[in-house]
Image (cartoon, rainbow, N blue to C red; front, side, top):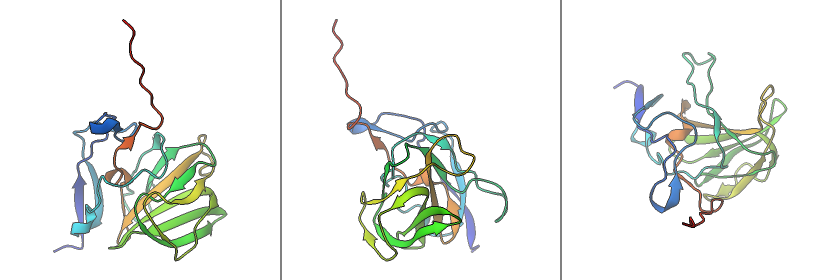
Length: 188
C-alpha cells in the first residue's frame, strides 16, 4: 500500500442554513464539488472532519491551494478575514506544540494527536505556551494584520496530517449564527 493517497473529502461548502440555525463554510464552491487533498493513508485522515469549531468567524478570503511540489507555490491553508485583535480559539482539544515568532511573525501550532496538527499564523499576541493543554474553544491568541502584501486583516489556518497539508475547510463544522443574527417578524 502506498504511503500517500488522494483523499476525497466531500464538503458542504456553500453557505446553507442547517438544523439549529447553523451556517456552513463561507464563500466556497458548490456542495457537489469535492476537494482533493493529499494525505498519508490513514483512517485518521477523515477523523474529526467537519466537526471542528471555527477558530474565528469570518469569510474565507483565500482558499486552500495544494502546491504541485513540496516547495512549489500554492496556499497551504485558508485565510479568514477578521479584525486585528479578534480572539482566536482552539478548534479542537490539543497540546501546544509551538508558540512564538517565525520570521518576525507570531504563530501557534496545536497537536491534536494521531499526527494531526493545526497552525495559526500572523497573530498579534499569543496567550499559550509550548506544552499547554488546551480545550476546544479555549483562547490561544489574537489575530494580527495578516501576511505582508495582504489588503485584508486575516487569520491563516493550516492543517497537516503526518506532515501532509490538508484543506482546513474539511475539518471545520458549521458556524452558529445565533449569537450575531437576530430575526425580526415581518409585519403584514
